Image (tube, rainbow, N blue to C red; front, side, top):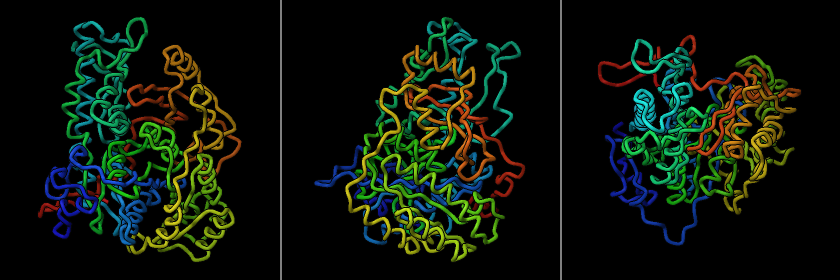
Length: 543
């Protein structure tokens, strides 16, 4: 920790004044955007989205690539703002591990960031669960405007994966009103989505007000505003609304804020943080969760319209030889040029989806020690045949200097005018039309099948006037399809829509496909089992 730079010096790189830096311990701070003066004659920073091909369970290093690329651009003399999501405790303790990068391309202090950080996740949990308690209280006392006890839809949340909490019964034992409910993980909370989609405090308040907590006896939506605790929720979220400032392994600035998952939520950091990055940086490096078909599409289709971002400089698609072998059904850790050749179909699917949105893709090969030269050459030749820019990057081992080939590949695109975002469907498209366009154009499905429940809810949402909201797909991240066992680029399949959950505060409809759930579970051997506190006070096992 002693090698980390003072945060006021880190902030000064982006001309963030000391009075805007609100210290949170020694190595983290909140940033007050209202105390940052506008840069004279400086256009908003150009946005580069870092996404990926469909990953293996361990991930392909998208966050590490984002950090390494930002360090590389900084080393090359660019004024760059790195803007990322906050990690969730679910993956930290579960399968994937931490969300702060790796090697010498990390955000620091990585242990603190992966655990409690500045308390944003706890504040979101508290605000969400306060509303849940207040809804139960309103039902118990029969207050005017309370939802019918049979139709309460507002679940509780917790920031670790726990399968036992997916479906529970509360209110038994004579206390409260008995009802079936459950827990979602914090990253799937609509409060999290509202905070990340809000442009300022007033917008956040309005979004919280219009969330639906249930239905009344006539099956009409009950908004959170009628429960009367929005003000208290805002009080809990006061500090959580401010972006966080930390630093990269090489001492560069990193803005971290918000943490929705991309498989069960919209998968992007906050609009407030992205706006801040564009105010203080000439180039903004940001990411969206999982692959382009999930997080990348949501970045372009959900976040950008809400943020007023209508064009991007480039979309970096991270790929690894490991993932290409996986999708080509090769053996793990074994050089297999034929498997890599087959796995390129998955990369192509994501490149096609990037182009479908009118964007310029750049393929970043995240280097691993066991990558064979002939496998790397095959990927480069394939991209060249497609006229897609491609570069290797060894940012994990060599930080910003290892990312210089990727920097050089990106720089010509940064010199161009940003490419306008092309929507997948028209602004007045119906919910079914939006899902159909997404399924066919991005996932490669032959069509969409709707369960009876989804059909009923589609009609109901149309009657309630929210049938044309944008779509936020909740589906497995392990496949382009809704079946996690199907690798590569599946063909001859149909997307199955099982359920719909409207999020009027966030401004979209969550479409649940396949068997997707909003509360993950821990694996047989969770990473939590290797985390420990040592006698000297240091924490080990958080990676």
